[in-house]
Length: 74
Image (tube, rainbow, N blue to C red):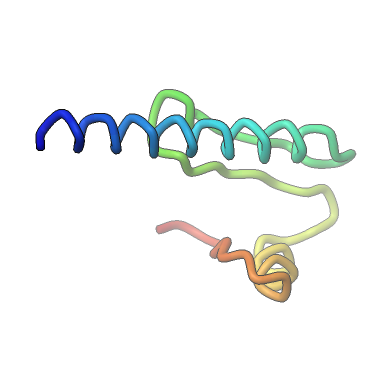
């Protein structure tokens, strides 16, 4: 049972790493976007800013698309 759990957690981590890499790559390719992320060494959470857009505006736009990305500190 322990080995199965370890394999499952490793698979989840690998999947999350792939998703993180995809979103970081996509965001950094956008003009005016700055990504601040240490997610590869920590939790799969990233912080980014967009020129001429406030955090609340970005959060609302993402929420309208079904993406949970709260603005502010948590």
